[in-house]
Length: 311
Image (cartoon, rainbow, N blue to C red; front, side, top):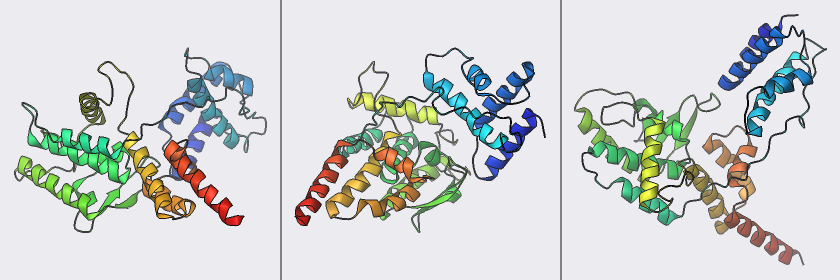
């Protein structure tokens, strides 16, 4: 039987072979192994796991719950080689559900955001305007994650066939994302601006800054917040408000809303939508759509129609 530190290494290697990245879990579990060594503990107990999880002072109970979750997952693996292992119960430091509700953009709000993106700013180069316009538009129609859009390389964008290749996604897998001809047309316009800036120089990223480098998430977020304040989507001093990631939620909601309007069966479309969004499980897609008033109204109307038809 190997020691706990070796067990952590074996566990991480196994999970990563299945496509998980586990960057945060690795930090947690290595720290947990060191904690156990300092206490000369030979095997995992629920008491020690909870003690370690609550060590850093924090007002966020979900932070402690997340640390314990990492140990619980490892303990399920560890018990196969060390039967003395205790798996911390799920009601020990439970995670509290967030009451957060994503902002579902109106089509008019997205149109205003895109129009504002193209407005000229003193001292700003045209590529900055076109980059924002193309990225915000791409996020709104494909539901891509922000990082997926920013990580696109030139070779990943096939505008002749209207296909984007998303590599090494959140769960370590790749997928193809087909885009509409109108989206390809806008991306071609952006590409003209990109080529004009580079003037024959090469750059691997598809979306570039005025310096020809890959646009960072923080810079794009800052630009989005500035525009959302300008458009009145958030107050001048508001710390919260619409997020770029909410464009992903909006796209998912719109797809299901169109299914209801067309009389199609949303349940049959969900697997395709889940695959398109790059989710590894339908539960993640359901989470994107949960508690949306518009969809709830459509679902109730559809249910009432079935009831009336059955009477």
